[in-house]
Amino acid sequence: MSSTDMIAPTSGWRQLQFFFDSKLHVRLESIIVLVVLGVAMSVLSPYFLSVSNFLNILLATSTIGVLAIGTTLILCSGGLDLSIGSILGLAGVVGAYFCVELEWPWFMAIVGALGAGAFAGFVNGQFITRLRIPAFIVTLGMLGIARGIGLIIAPNGGAIYGLPGPVIYLGQGRPLGIPSPVIILAIAAVLSHYLLAYSRFGWHTLAIGDNESAARATGISVESLRRKLYTISGMMAGLAGLIFMARVNAGDPTAGYTYELTAITAAIIGGTSLFGGKGSILGAVIGALIMGVLQNGLNLLAVQSYYQQIAIGAVLILAVYIDQLQTGKEKKA
Amino acid sequence: MSLLQISGVNKHFGAVQVLNGVDLTVEAGTVVGLVGDNGAGKSTLMKTITGIYAVDGGDVQFSGESLIGVAPGARRQRGIEMIYQDLALCKQQDVAANIFLGREPVKWAFGFLPGFVDKARMDEDALKMIARLGARIPSIHRPVGMFSGGQQQTVAIARALTFNPKLVIMDEPTAALAVREVESVLKLIRQMRDEGIAVILISHRLNDVFEVTDRIVVLRQGRIEADLQTRKTQMREVVSYIVGAH
Image (tube, rainbow over all chains, first blue to last red; front, side):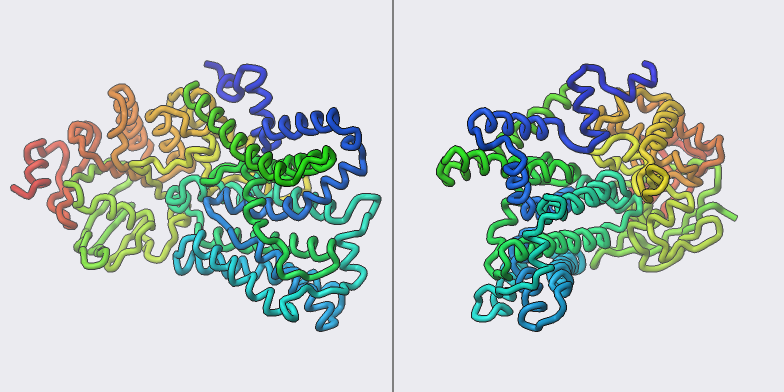
């Protein structure tokens, strides 16, 4: 056996899969699904294939996309964060409270939203790693706590309106014709993709999700890494809250309800394992886009939204099934 | 000065005293077999050397310096490696990721982006290491969970040997292997000794222990029961110490 045989697999399809997996750190299948869906929608609806509609899809995907990035990091580490939907709502309220109720300068909305998100995530991490309470329980608790705090801060539990112009621009502005949330999502995705796929931080994240005791034995400080990951996840939820708030021009304490499940769906459609050790940031964004294209296309075809929910549920189950088939095949090979 | 000097080490889990004043020294370039019944404290003792467990009393010295309070990662940097019975591999990651786990080399991407894991260099070194061990692996880019038991063992050994260790602890390295694979592991242990590496071999297979060790240490109920020269003892004597019938 020559050394080149040991590096690259042989068949054409496998080689292509390998290239996407190991060089681009995204699964070929999820890209194919997205393209096939896009082509199908273009054939079915004359309105689908246009730049403005694509920008619409990207805009509609941006909030879930940002959440799915944090979720992917958490899932890769073998963790779970159910609190991000509530944190999104809380972050928007805190941001709006700072610059509307307290009349602080506009950028304090950003500080408030990201800060509230990061702090909630930091608290999650502390409880999970120091008190050793399962992530499911801690973040389920935070799901209630963050939502409750948001409702308390907002006057009479209602939304805070009247954000300053620069903040609204973050949600409704179009620098170079591209919606600001799409730009924010792109920046967050590129940075996080680097973090997960190319940095030691990301490699260690995958390692602790894969085999925690092995990672600990090699000297990786598992607890400190987990604390950072939950803080990042909370901050991403804060960023999503900022985008949401700016888009609707209000800090709404009920925003983001059940978004955590949508974000997990996007991450898993994008090839991230629910059980840790495997995942892709670009995959999560593609997963969010697959859902966005489905919703947009079915809307254009005037299909009732109830059917959209069925379609997304089916895609999720199918994605995991295909993944299992693949893994099974590789094991036999 | 001994490479490893353990003196009076105690360790308890709750009310259970697992290690009870253990003394043990290991010289560079020697192979020490550590034997004992299940629950004698072998793995616990080894984990106090690697730093997974903190000792409750006593001292662990390596190259003349105390390891008390030193984290597992720092102990690896000083040259202590352990190959775990369950191999401690990340099954979904590939060969290079496992060999370099916790010690990934980094580079600047495009000359200005910091902190990129140097995958090309890792793959190259991983290939070299696998070749040096004389092993065959289908592809170093496959997740190691897809390999056979012997191939996974090779990856675990490669991880221990890649960073020029001074002491390698092997916990039941031959338990799950085919006969031919056992031979190659034993050959490797001799090769390590010849290179001046100290090896502690934990094994239930006394044939293997007699074949490669210089000394055999018997642990029983958390105490050192016997410390024997392999050349001057026999299987029957070792067994009698293990079961406490000596």
